[in-house]
Amino acid sequence: MLVDYLVKQNWLQTPRIIRAFQEIKREDFMPEEFKDYAELNQAFPIGWGQSISQPLIVAFILERLQPQNGDKILEIGTGSGWATALSAQIISKKNETAGAEQAKGLIVSLEAISEIKETARENLAKYGFIEKKLVELCVADGFKGYPKISERSDLSGGFDKIFSTSSVKELPKEWKEQLKIGGTIVSPIGNSIWQFFKAREDKFEEKEYPNFSFSPIFTQQQQLITV
Image 1 (tube, helix red, strand yellow):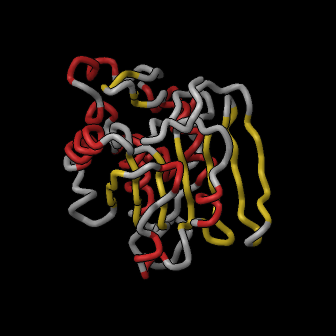
Image 2: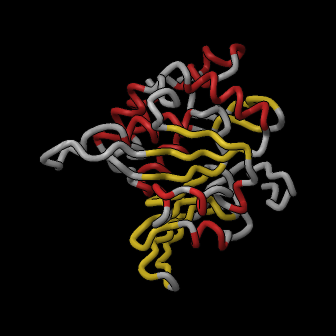
Image 3: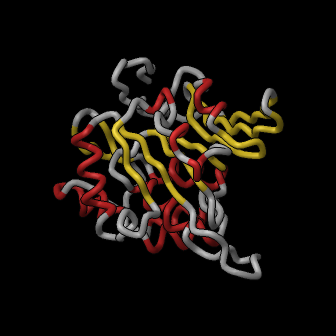
């Protein structure tokens, strides 16, 4: 089984993240012709030149991101909605170390291709995340961050975490600006996964995890690299 493999190979380590992978079925986010292969550790096309990410990539990114109950998270590139659903499942659960239930979190997911966003909406409907107001989908150029953040009182301090599963040339300044102090960004840059911690408004601590391979984000201006 896929989850057992990811745990055995140490791609998955955190109990609440492991449970999300067990509870959110990857096949529910794959085109019909590929559903029988959902347990394979590889990416598959979902149309419009995009793909559902390789499971070990999603697992590694979420382990670095460490979503928590109540987090407000910005996802860049909705794709199939699988990583969106995993994140929503994690932030909606009570933290194992918390003494009481915390506030409900939110995933704001940006997708440049409207058709892919609608497919993701249909996939996410299988779990009720949009109806429960745990997930909001938006057609937008993710490279520029969330365009409506200045209009949202609930996001006045920024996002707790930001992540992408597709590669960018460099970390966009809009992502840095829209992250809370104390927050984390995890994103592929080139062929590495990078983790950024916002220590102060003008200071980021960073760590590189090299030797990965990714598909680029599709943006309306095509500003990202192809790898």
